[in-house]
Length: 345
Ligand code: CP3
Image (cartoon, rainbow, N blue to C red):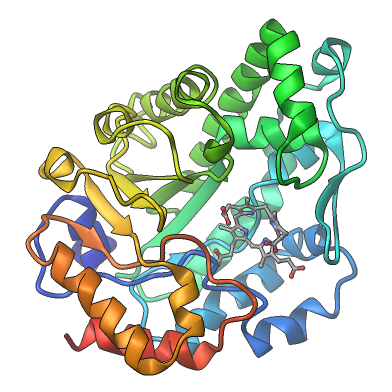
């Protein structure tokens, strides 16, 4: 058995299956007591990500707890800006904080060239995870989209409106494009190394796509995601690796998302006007279910899970997932319950 026989790879190849493959964004994380027990040994979250044995242990935790069809690398999207010298730390209740955010075109010019070797701890984690999972279980590698990485790098922390970022991209257009190009090149080299180390699938997270108007989204995000995907499709090492694009609440239509050349679109839970008929036969689909449903009782979870199954039952290539990551307030028992409903439908 190889990963080609797995139902995830079949669904990504747009095959219609009787039961969808199942995995969850943030399947490893604070909602799991096993995760919290490991996490408390590290002050800084990124120090934990820099330990390949611990990353392997954390990636395996959800596989041991639930009946899932894929592993996802345990790491973070902010490893690249950290490696470029922006120095990322994670502060409790605040989230990521950059010690050296980008504040000017001078700062953009000062950024060092990305050396893929500087993230060898990630590729080592990929190798460890790959050795520890069944031969037919795919491992998903990932990166942030160039735009999402740029937004964090300029803002310097999470924010509700990313005001500094919006001002910067308006006033420093050339530097913004320079920065986006640098991140696109870095993402390509980074993902290529993840694939060399054993990643079978790639997911690109455009978690801050929702900040941009339609035109800006095309100019500052989709253009670079498409360039990244095309670079991967044109490289012999990554050419056959299926690519999933998660774009959070993007203000563009279905056709424009599909034009990215991704093999699969991961649906954010609010994308109610996504046109599945425009997508049929062109891309696989993933997700859709509102993660907050998992805070409800089991009857409601069951009802909502069945609605999603009904919606995609004839869609060629549907992957069950949530419409965003599992949040820390979710009871692992509900994940088990939901997984069983999907598996036994
Ligand atoms: O199973 C998995 O999916 C784990 C691997 C993973 C993590 N982050 C671990 C993590 C993945 C795929 C990510 C992606 C990621 N990181 C995204 C894209 C996905 C999305 O939610 O849109 C983003 C935006 C980040 C950046 C990030 N990392 C933030 C904003 C935060 C802090 C706030 C928060 O939501 O926790 C993190 C920290 C982080 N990344 C944690 C985990 C398990 C929690 C850190 C902790 O334990 O203190």
